[in-house]
Amino acid sequence: MSHSQSIPKSTDVETLAQAEAIYLSIWNMNCPDCAIYVRDGLILMDGVLRVDVFYEQAVGVIIFTPSMTTPDKLLHVINKIGVDVCHYYWAEIIGRCPAKQALRLA
Image (cartoon, rainbow, N blue to C red):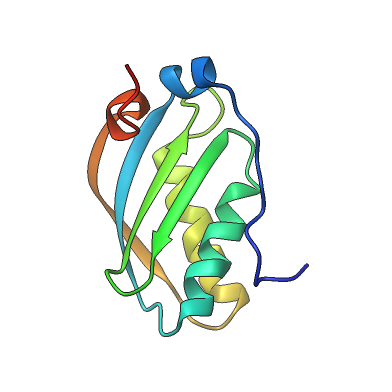
């Protein structure tokens, strides 16, 4: 799998409106590819609808379906991704809200 392109995941507005968003602080991303590794690893998870990782700010926003995954599982996957690429990422939840608020859906 190429890590230079985003992995698309289609979702409808109704599904996004029922989802939750968490905001993360992510440590030890040393290059732009790190953000891609984190994003691609998370978007492959069942229940994850959208992932935005901002390398320079060391933050991420994950939109997920709470009935399919949990914030703890998301954090665990970030840690595992880091081990897999020898970077040892660590993340902490810094905020949480309904996805419709994060995405500004009516």
